[in-house]
Image (cartoon, rainbow, N blue to C red):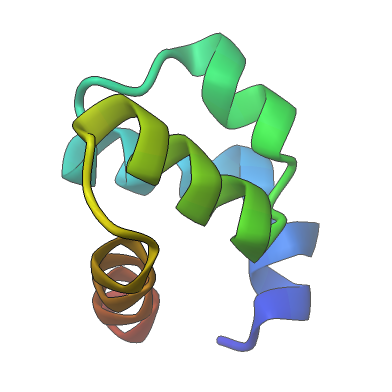
Length: 65
């Protein structure tokens, strides 16, 4: 699934994101709207990790979706 598909199916996919990053709220995930950079930013802020690490986590999650 490419990012356009993730974005188009965000309502279905965000549950899987919530499983992966349990500290993210439903409102935060809704705000991301499937945008990769917004999701990376949220993870970076919420977990206090570097952007590169957040991007790596998102890429691994995306590969498994």
